Structures are given as structure tokens and as C-alpha cells.
Image (tube, rainbow, N blue to C red; front, side, top):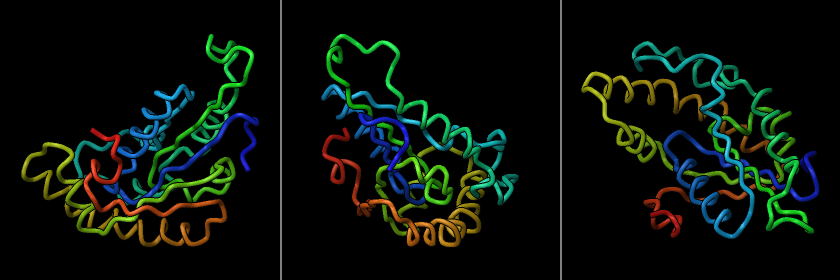
Amino acid sequence: KNTMNAHSVAVAVAGPSGSGKSTLAVTLAAALRHDGVRVTLPHQDSYFRLPKPGSYWSTPPEHDTPAAVDMERLAEDVRAAGRPPPEPDEAARGAEQLQIVLVEGFLLLQDEPLLSLFDSALFLRVDREACLRRRLQRSTRSESEQEGCRRYFLDVVWPTYERITLPALDAATLPLSVLDGSQPAQARWPLAR
């Protein structure tokens, strides 16, 4: 489906905030690189149009919507990552090296031009409480910021997921595997250590 080249595959790794997308994408990338596959791993969070707000209490609700992400630049980087390197490495000389572009993010299924670049998608399903718990545990914050993170997640992040991402998931036409992301990373992805 993608428009990159015959030896590249683009895969979206999507799901709600706190579902384990980054863990899965990094684990897959490491395993594939170990097997000699060239992997590029763009993270959607690197494409926010505005700088990261200093506090959850001051984060505008539109920060977690597709409009807040520079989807055009992300799509261009996905296309560029799928092009063959100008000079293949020694192991790839004489044969085309497989290239995999793993794109990780919570808003990947909503943008049709970006979606058209993917050959398939992995979607992690996790309930709201588990996602919130993981989001609260992944950084050290002051008590006030922890409460701000919790409120922001419950008032903005999860409702946006239900309003925007779930309908996009239902409408997605590309090959898609829905994975249970509720177990700890070591149980879900045995290569995660």
C-alpha cells in the first residue's frame, strides 16, 4: 500500500496514551536490527507543533488532537525513511536490504495522507485505569503536577481517545492487528527487558 519502495514496510504502532506503544516499538526495532533489518523509528511526540507545556495545569486541551501534530512533516519523514540509503552498507551490497519504518504514536490513524503510507498497523488495547496508572508512573512529578496529570488524562486525553481515535480505528482499512497491551511489558513482549 505504501508509496516508498519495494523493499520497505511502514507499520503504525498506535493506541491510547500509556498503552505501551513506545515499549513495543522500541522492542520490535531492537529485535529487527539484531536480525540485520534497517529500522527507522519516528515518534509522533517529536512532531508536536508547539513546545511541551511546562505544566499539565496549563496544557491546552487541543494539545492532544491531530491539529497539534505536524502530520505533513511526519508523513514526509516516513516517506524519506522508506527510501533506500544512498550507499548500502556492506551486508546489503548485492541485495536490497529490507527497511522497516515503525511509527509510534497515539494519533496515527486519524490522518488519511499519513495512513496511506502504512502497510499495516498494530493497535494496543488497554483500559483507561491501566493507561492512567502507567502515565502517572512513567515520570517523577510534584504532588500538584501528579494531580494535574491525572486530571488532564481523565478530562482531556481519554475523552479525546474515545472521540477521535476509536472511530478512526473502526474506520481503518489497512491490515490491522489489535493487541492486548494490558500485561506488563515482559509478559507482552518477551524481548522487553
